[in-house]
Image (cartoon, rainbow, N blue to C red; front, side):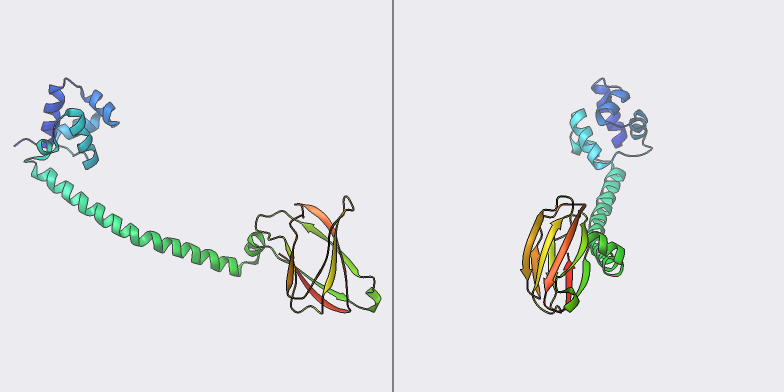
Length: 211
């Protein structure tokens, strides 16, 4: 009863092909061919298919009567099927775990939160002695996660007038009023630029957010 190794050697010899030439075609080492032919180990199923094409010998001829090889291939196929099932279970669990961990870190770690979803809170108090308004400087640091919006939160006293000026050019970039609980887009802001924010409104406290 001829083993698959013997059949490989016989077919290779008939084609007047050296072990090195066959190994080059299969992109394996010459010693791998020698090991197959001597029966020390077996090629995998994909390689057997390629051997069948290169040596022009049917799979039936290669595998027929080699019960050990057929058994090993069957076992390998069962192992591969088990691996696929395990991967189908493990990969989704890993992804869920990764997202869960990332979310918890995002919620708990203020540094992470500020990097990926930066928010600047500003509390402004306007009184009689600030009837001309109040101003503060603001640096817009370019970040792809900035929504470029300013929010006059629900807790603010009333509508507030906001003027944003580019400190370098003294150009007025924005001049608008915003009601409590409303937001205003700031798409014209440029990254790493200093701005002067001027605020005017009724006496009271205003809670502003730059998001």
